[in-house]
Amino acid sequence: MVIYTHDYQVYSKIFMSEVTTVKVTKRTREKLAELGKKNETYEDIIERLIEFYEKKSIGRTRNYGKD
Image (cartoon, rainbow, N blue to C red; front, side, top):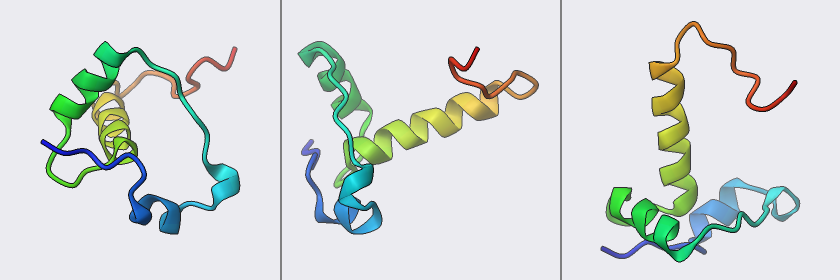
């Protein structure tokens, strides 16, 4: 499986000033890649995981880490 981390579509959807870097271990990156679908970016994978989490967490607050 090939995951495009610098896919043009990501940058065409998001302004460069809104892009950041998230450091993860190689093991975590590999796990994300395994969860990915063909031509899916890390951005797409993470967004899909967040949506899944939100659907499973109905009734919980959505203030991720905002105390």
